[in-house]
Length: 218
Image (cartoon, rainbow, N blue to C red):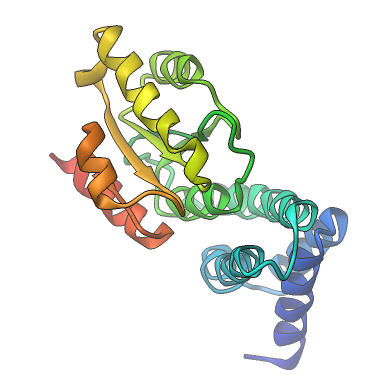
């Protein structure tokens, strides 16, 4: 890797960590102009940086404003990179549509953003409905977008019951069998996913990609 390329990657990572949206966008454009591969930037700059930010937050080394700012910067960079992938003809045919959100009363979305970035780069159409999403909003989005998969993220233990409430609503509406529903996040594990009747659980973003690929192939 050339020295300018290494410098741009390092500066982009720093801008993401610091939550500098405009700087992250500018550096992303510079990297693309220098010939960087957009998928490689996602997998080897954005994802590792966001994973480290998430670790720092969980270790109380940074706090919610820094976490959210980093997420905003990463989202801005991701939009540019995803557009470049599509423009180059990569992943133009979607593997399936995924509605993705952080559950009601949970405003943490760094993990969700990492998952969105990886799923998008692997060929899924991802409808990100944000954070603090009510069960009814998951259902509305799934029906509106004709989703294949509904993916819920929950970080805080206090918001874990919202995953059960969402699945229950799909069941009550007679729509449960229309979608594969999967879970992830810091307070979720396989036992909980099994207990509430989810179709799958992933411990990390890479696992979420593998899980979604398996589910759409069934």
